[in-house]
Length: 209
Image (cartoon, rainbow, N blue to C red; front, top):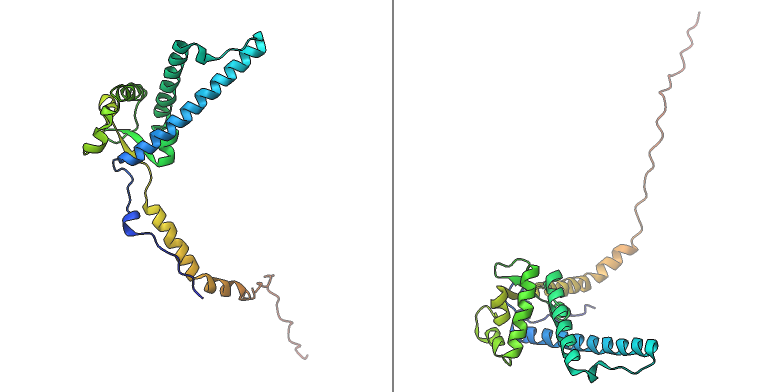
């Protein structure tokens, strides 16, 4: 009995590697990064307060000092995005969504471009999101931070790999019975070669005298 494995739709298996990333993928990736960065910031504040309380015995929270807390948050967000872009061209959220920052020529970005792109991201946020409109209306999906750093965001995976996995799974299911029968076949007897020794001469014939 052959089990039919459903195949994904053809439009869902088209390779997208190297294509400009869409607005939805980039928005979800940014939301993931914002949540991770915010959570790590709260964790850092809690650890700082615990260390201060352990050393001095006084309760200290960074939120009581709004200016210091704001500066610390801005510095942390800058390091979060700039460092990851400089190292791998992608943040944690971008890695999960399969997108990556590259140069306009398609190569890896430099440390300087990572810093400029992080500053450009701040400009996009200061303009209340107006700097992100290029992702929706521009052909190359480049936002203000991409123009500042001369970068672009592309897909870093190929959806064709998913289709190949489905095909391999279907192929393996179709030939499962045949493979099982072959595994049960007894192996052919192996012939062991005889050891080769020095040739022996025949006994001499008896010659009557």
